[in-house]
Amino acid sequence: MKIGVITYPGTLDDRDAQRAIRLAGGTPVPLWHADGDIKKVDAVVLPGGFSYGDYLRCGAIAAQAPATQEVVRLAAQGLPVLGICNGFQILVESRLLPGGLIRNEHQHFICRDQRIRVENTNTAWTNLFEQDEEITIPLKNAEGGYIASAETLKMLEAENRVVFRYLDINPNGSMNDIAGLTNERGNVVGLMPHPEHATEAGFGPDTDIATRSGVDGLKFFQSVLKALVNA
Amino acid sequence: MPKIIVEIMPKQDLLDPPGKAVANALKRSGHNDIVNVRIGKRIELHFDRPITQADLDNAGRVAASFLSNDVIEDVVAITKED
Image 1: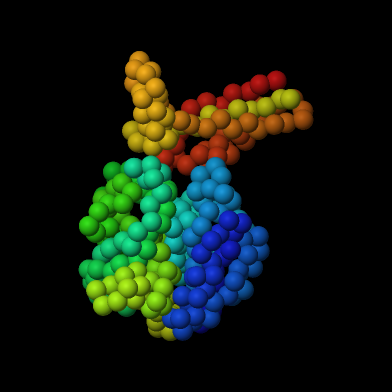
Image 2: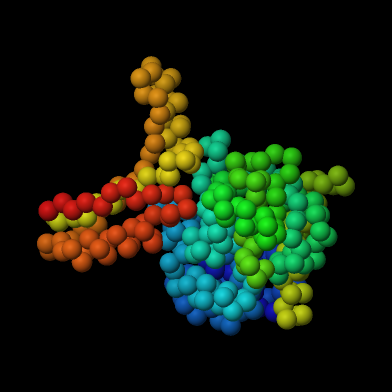
């Protein structure tokens, strides 16, 4: 299974996303933002970083890129898409997911191992989790405050589209403690924390068992491979 | 140079963290009469010819669809400068 990872000018975590895909058993395919041909990949990851230096608004210019426009077109046909951090910002700027992301309420960049709850396991990227499973993956952002209108929040909650919710603390002032969302169909998922940084023992968050042994992020990438096999 | 000026502000009911940081700094330096600060954007679109009504209409569309995000921001003014 080929999973594309789009690199924009200013992307940081494309290599980590490619590595996570490899560790999960997939074949990562590097994609370039300026190329509207996304090489017939079976799924796409929009990785974290600071595309276009966060100019205008985080993700706003990347949303206009030829590769993103192709992803938007194919997402409507069911292509699985995962947006991580800046990738989540690109998804909301592309209108694939509703709402917006603004500067953290406390105004600081935050970097921590974050506990979140998986509240929807019917998406392409979460089908291997248990309902309400609590996982820990790194969070690192400055513009992670999720906001949406009261009607949008009501709709997201009613339709079970909040996929991840922050536990312990709300690290950025996100409404309803929202850490990640899905679209109506469940093929597009966006979240602020970084599953790709918790996929290999020795490089992940600390756990009760050993330091840096957390690999809770691996199931994101294994889930999409399972979804593709079953499709 | 003829230009169209687009002014964008964060929505009134949203917290504006940069504005809040500046307001706090002003308060610390004794500007107690300034009770609040909000920070927006001014974007200039330059032309090398006179600006037409069609240019202004197009600027309005670009301002709404790309230069601003209506989830978090409002376009508060679009003006022409010759």
